[in-house]
Length: 132
Image 1 (tube, rainbow, N blue to C red):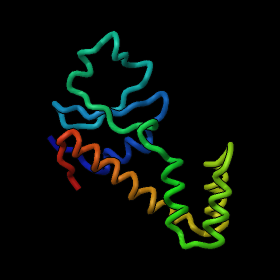
Image 2: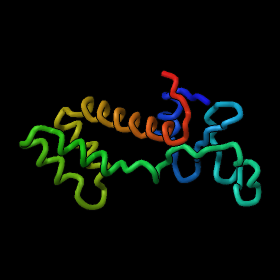
Image 3: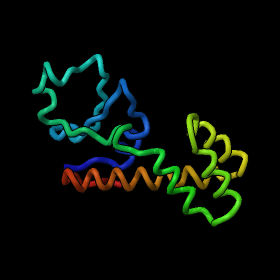
């Protein structure tokens, strides 16, 4: 079995409460399933050949933000961002502050690497080869 790395990462980025992504082991493709369109309990045979991809609950975006912050050089940017992610609205404030500090490019590169790591771990766990 094989799958494109970019397909896994794209699915991870777009997964939400209404949409889940699966790897179809028969066709070696990533499939998107809508919550209302497919019901796994009533149709369990639909999922016999499907492996769920990492979804929003498997990806701890907050932890990724924390790790990014603490990998920055000690100083003002690290302190400001650490305070920014405290409490409600942390994600919005974090992204706004990244812009103010001119760290957007660095953040998105870090986030992309974190998603790639999760995707590679998922493929190893399920014995699926990654196609670059």
